[in-house]
Image 1 (cartoon, rainbow, N blue to C red):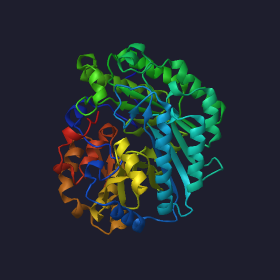
Image 2 (cartoon, rainbow, N blue to C red):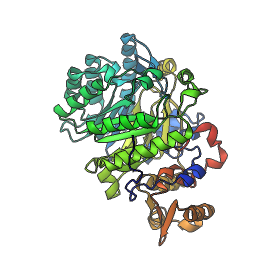
Image 3 (cartoon, one colour):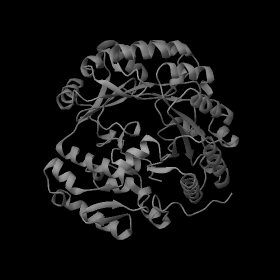
Length: 468
């Protein structure tokens, strides 16, 4: 299968030389500082106090609820999950979750409107319809959820765990966005990663979502999986384009079996070669842009009329632990095992182990394990990184005004590398403004790493996935 190799170069320009030179390992910057900077020595009391002190109590909220259970293990998965066919495992977990929810409501709710809600996992659709209803009722009891369908209320769907009837329940509960994992439609690939999912299952979910008036459908794909070929993945992308989701996420499979046990089932020799993997990515980008999707950044694409695309054009895009979002004004209150919150100038993460999470919540009604309180330097660098990763450009004068610094003096060391990026064509300077070129957009993580004060202190290659 042959596709145009000329993408819309106002969005992305494929430059193999730059990719090969700059394709290092690095953070995805869903936060800055990144999670490896979270300190277990900071007590929950310290983190909560700092969060309450630095938050805007009049601003809206974003809620995240983690449901860790999956019926089947997908060999590629690096999420925090519990594999079980026993549906009764959910009830005791939810009981502890409600205790944590009551605590967090007392700390942060303050009658603040919830503009964003997301259930992730694991597989949120693992729990029964009645448990879903109870979870939403408890959330509504403790937080001020919207009832006008104007919020951004989303849920991750495993098409093997849902059908048209279940979609009706999800819509009735107030969800108006869904994200479903497809990964690849090729049977041999699905078999190799233990996720047999006929495309008809995904079509049922997407068709139901449209009939029920969901605002947005996101589809996740993964490139670099075993037995994928250039042609086979192009066919997958063509089929997904036919289904016309509003957004797509096209993730790079990072093979790290030493860190994720389930990945040991995947053999190195079955993976596409690095050269083929790059061609797969290049073709995928071309296919999606040719089909009218806008490149948002970092694996994400959206139709031009999608809220993400509009927010990017208008300069209002934001990034948090759920990825790209339009809700930059929201504190993120996260509940459940391993969930990460951002309150004011504080990030903290819950206990990662399911049994420990339940035991700690039973004992203390909260589950904070580790976190970080941002310094002024962290806040300055977070602002720079967020602006670059969301909008591909930076006006230093805005940073100077916001933080009362001289940008060139403050980032004197970084200027040397920026000049090198400019010479190599990753960025350009328009006056003082830093503009990421179409050739540099795929390597935005590498550009952001320049402003990461912790990067020299950590061995990125052992901690993070490769950029491409």
